[in-house]
Length: 85
Image (cartoon, rainbow, N blue to C red; front, side, top):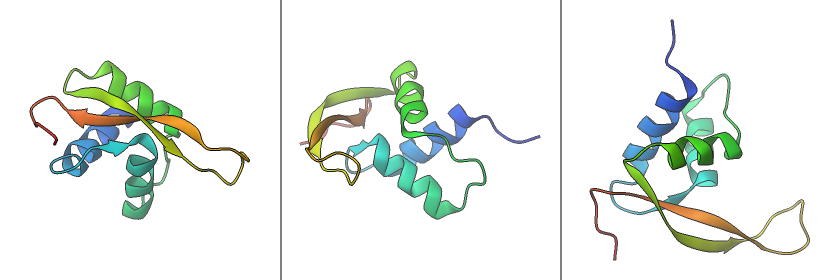
């Protein structure tokens, strides 16, 4: 039996955010590069990070998109045990 999606997300996010904060899209791209079979959506990644107390929202950053004609704000996530400068 495999791990749950939330465990998969938080494990990848913990590895990624050891030095720099990341967005949910960054976590999604890392999971995709790792070759996960059932990828969680970016929204599921945000919900998993929001409910886990080891992560917190640093703020908002603007990103562009192929679907939208204007840039939009997304959450920048970090770990609570690391001080980002």
